[in-house]
View (cartoon, rainbow, N blue to C red):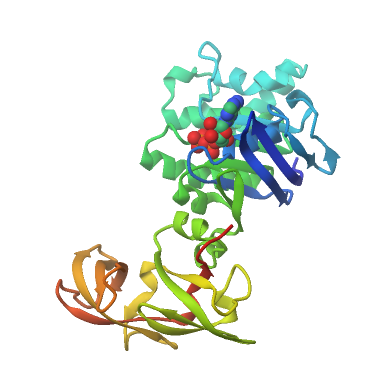
Length: 364
Ligand SMILES: Nc1ncnc2c1ncn2[C@@H]1O[C@H](COP(=O)(O)OP(=O)(O)OP(=O)(O)O)[C@@H](O)[C@H]1O
C-alpha cells in the first residue's frame, strides 16, 4: 500500500527552543523522499511527528487524506525503521519478519508465507530459518527492512537506517533500498546527513537547516538550481563569488563581481527576480569552470587566475586557483584531464552563464 503525506505549517518547540519551524511538505504516494541536513537540523523531529512519536506544537499532518495530527503511532499507517534495528536474537529470520503480523493477530500459515515473500524481496529467502547472529551487518539490515515492510505500511519512515554500515556496504544498500522501494511502491521518508546517499536514492530531497526547509526538489534540481545558499553549499562543492546587481531589465541583470561583470539571464536568479543594488552571491560548481576557448556554447570570461595547486584525480584535475586582482577569492575548479594543468600556470577562467546560480547574499 502507499499514500500521500501532507505536512502543513508544522512547528515543534522544546521549551524556548524551536526544533521545527513552520515546515510544510506535500509528498506524493509512492515517492522516495529524503530529509537531508546537518546534525540537529530537525530531521528526526519531523520524522517522529510523521510517525506519531511526537505531536507538533502547531500545524497538522495528514496521511492518505486522513487527519493524523493527534493519532497515536499504532493507529497510523506508518512503520518506522531505526538505525538500531534491533532484531530479536533468539528468533529465526522468518519469525523476526513475521513478528509485526503476529502482533496483528495474523495466523501462523499466512505469517510464514508473507515473511518468506518479504525475505525473498530482500534476497534472503534461503536464510528464513537462520538466526540474526548468522548474518552480516548488511543482511541484518535487509531483514529489518523486510520486517518493516511485512506489515504493509502506507508510509515507511527510515531514520538513518544505513548509518551503522561501512561505506562500501552503505553504497550497495542504497542501490538495493531504492530498487526495493520501486518494487513495493510504498512511500518512503528517509533521514540522512549524507548528501551522496540522498542523491543516490531520493526522488526528491528536502534540505533542512535549523528547523526550516531550505530547498525541496529532485536531486539534479537542488544541485544545479539551488534556491538557497545553504542548499547550494550542502549539496556538493561550490564556489561563492560575491557581487552586486547593477542593471536589471526584463531579461536578466548585470552583476558586478571581483572577477568582472557578468550578464545573467533571469533563470540564473533561482530565489526570485533580481533588483538593482541588491547584494548577490554567484554559485559556481568546480566542474563548470573551464579555460576560455574550451568547450562549446556561450561562455563568459571571468579574468585570469594563477594555479596555486593542482592534483590529478583520474577524471579531472582538481585545481586551486588564485584570481589575479582578487586576492580575497579562492576558486576550486575541475579541469578536463585531457590537458595538463601545472602549478604556477596562468589561465583565463570561463564559465557558461547558464551554469551560474545567483542568490541573495543574505537570506532571511
Ligand atoms: N526532547 C527534546 N528536548 C529538547 N530538545 C530536543 C529534543 N529532541 C530534539 N531536540 C533538539 O532539537 C534539535 C533537532 O533535533 P533532531 O533530533 O530533530 O535533529 P536531527 O537533524 O535529526 O539531528 P541528527 O542528525 O544529529 O540526528 C536539536 O537541537 C535537538 O537537540
